[in-house]
Image 1 (spheres, rainbow, N blue to C red):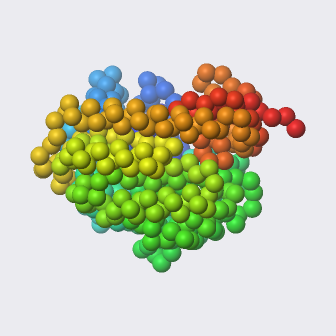
Image 2 (tube, helix red, strand yellow):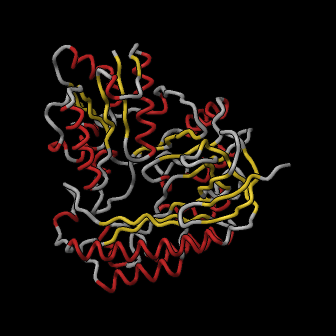
Image 3 (tube, rainbow, N blue to C red):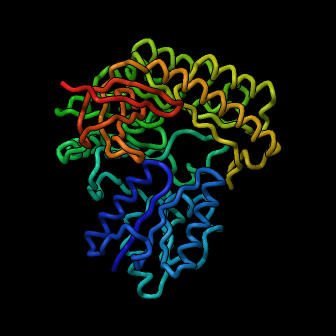
Length: 425
């Protein structure tokens, strides 16, 4: 029996997919890269935004219309199961991925396993499940699942639930195993890395200290952390980031530059706290690569509120901004509120998008002529090799082997990546 697993969305989903692949291989199934060669296709879905959900629906229908048997997993079965084509052969929630083999066996016998409801009563420690080790430079290590926030617009929490942090010793074991197998970039992943450990008496800074104490040459990319949790451990966190093994990369979503909008979003921090965290990191970590997320067009966002967001961007000047147009998600509080007209949301999105590209290009141009350390990731899509700098900026250089640390000179910059030449010893 041949199975193809395709996954969408965040790095957590990528890790979940590798767990399912390992369980399938253990059970004797053959994994295939091309869906047309598979007897079953597992679609590991994302449902964070309305356009993403639409793509998931269309992809599932496309596979079913081509007479493929489909098992749907991931967030969509939790967030909006009614939009999933009833012809699918099974549905598993994010805490039921350990039943993937059972789902196919049930489908083969003419049944349909649906393991989504009552998921809060189910608890699995995903670090105790196997993973499929693939070739590559980067390895995702989930450190927790769920979050401690109650954002009024977020449907992901319907799938991932309340924070469950994985034991530090298990996280460290996976990192050690990955490094021993040749991985050179460890991506710590969670819905919110900033609140890691709050439920088990530890925190992210302590975990980073344990990981960076591991022998070997590798780099750690810390995933997104929310300001309301990062500020609680700010001094410890900044100190942990001083390690040369931690990328000088901070993903700190602000979502809005207006405190009233943040209150309506349920974000439980103020713009001033976001800026406090940025200042603390920038003082201690030179050349910090600051990434943030902003939602435009949230219900109740006035012209003044949007202008406050624009002014925050001009003041803080993030290296990268992920701009999202607000779209209501089923079951959320904000979906019940009066929505802004689509044309206004698009207008604000375009303005912010132009501003963020301008700022990013100005920041990146300052790297031209600079000597940087690069971890090579592999062949570039348009020639050369792709890599990540010491602060996790995308760079294309002329040569290098995957997993190799090299020195390069930046020769050119765009708004989204750098171009450079490898320096020879």
